[in-house]
Structure formats: C-alpha cells, structure tokens
Image 1 (tube, rainbow, N blue to C red):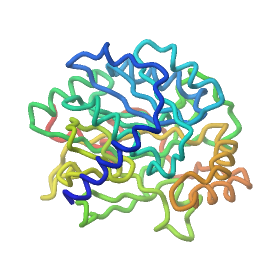
Image 2: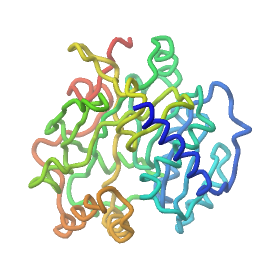
Image 3: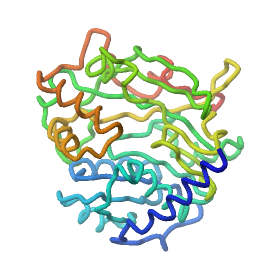
Length: 328
C-alpha cells in the first residue's frame, strides 16, 4: 500500500504538466483557510450557487480544474476573487477521472489545511451546519485528533419528471430536488482499503434494478486534514493511507459523519448525460451514462410512496443516514 500511494503521488506529479494556470490567487491563502477542490466541465449553470453555498460555510479558497469547458464557466470563475483556476484539454479518463489533477494540487497547496473535495453538484451537510461554520467542525476534529470525515452521497430528485421544472443559475437546487430515498441501501466493508462500500437509492432502483451490484458507490471521504504524503485512490471513495478510510466505529458505536446532497437530476440532466456518453470519459467506458440514457428515454419519475422530503440535517440523523457522534 505504501508503494501504491507513492505511485499515485508520482503520477500526480507527472500529470501536473497537463494543467495550465488561468488565474493563480494562492498568494491570498491564509494559514487557517479551509479549501474546496473540484474538477468540472460545462457547469456554468451550477457554479454561482456552488460558490455561494461553500462561501457561506466559511471555505477560504477554491481550487478549480476546468476540463475544456465551452459554456463560459472558465471565464466566469477567472473573475471570482477567491478562486484559483487551471484548465486542461487532456483526457479526464486518463487522469483517473480527474483524481491525478486534484492529487497534484492538494500535494502542492493543501498540506496541513482541511480540504473538501466535491463536484459542482455536491453540497456538504454536517452536524449543526445550520448554526456552526465549517471551522467549528474542523476545530473539533483537530481537537479530537481526527484526520478525515466521511459522508454518504445522497441522491436528490424532484416529484415528477426531472425536466418538468427548469433550473435557473444561482437557484438553490434543493428547491427543485426536494426528495430522497430514506432506505434502500446496502453497506459492507471493503477489506482491502478498510472503507465502507454503500450502494442503493434512486439510481439503483431506476437504472440498475437488474444489476444492482453495478450501481454507483455512495460512500465518500470528502473532508481531510491534508498531508502531502496522502493520495486519493478512487475519486473520494478511498484514500491512502488506509487509516483515513476508517470514518466509522468498528465496535458498534457512532462516529460523526455527514452527507453530500447530490443535485445531479436537474432539468438539464438528459443533455448532460448525452454529452458525457458521447465523450466516453467516465468509469467502465461510461456504462453508468449508458444506463442513464436508456432510462431517461421514458421520462421517469424518481418519486415513489417511500420518498422523503428533505428538511435538514437533523432529519437525516433521525433516519440514520448521518450522525453527530459525540459532537455536542
């Protein structure tokens, strides 16, 4: 595992040549800042609220990698005062789906900072997030000698066809994607990397009902007190060293965990899925996006009688989807 981690760090170092700096504002970074790292392509419609959400949480700086967008997203981000931006025309797939690029930026800039790795459609929710900033959480984790914080990816969806209500830039996507599956999840421990492996939710029942084992993984470790010797193995599903994946209590108790509200199914999802299917830059030759393209042909309604309407993090804790652990 040490050799594997070294390999990913060397690979990230080599992949740095694929990144071209658009604007570098890293001289503004403060010692106490927490960071967001993200890759994107053609996400202009999502970026205004994405930045607003994490700024309100207290994030100090955004490290963004643009994979050859042509919708104005790169130009928009270059004007944002707390964003450092890189661009690349290189293959997302050959960069291990962007992991190599972000591993490099975290290696260079993230050391000894709390780093949150999220996509533009992922919104981090943690215990007391409605009353306490992100720094309250990271200060508590520091005091508890905890280096990583796990979160389950929770797919959000509307009631009715996903293209029925158009999404407007700057809008809170949860105003449209108000529903989620409260159950319907499987979970087991990955003995190789010691992380939990979670599958299920609306994507499994709508697109992978015949092959549930092919459903996307929902386990993530997005928040880490970064060290230059760390490396993500597979998206934010797994880290090295493996001890960072132990974001759960192995003896039956509860550790504090969060949720990533996944705002994937907005009104433009069918166009996005068609674009990504054509590009074939995603995992397993874009099998996931082939399933989406086939399933979307019938304008499916994700809502069912067991769907829950999202209220807040306390609701998710009551349902057992996240936990405040011993953080009071």
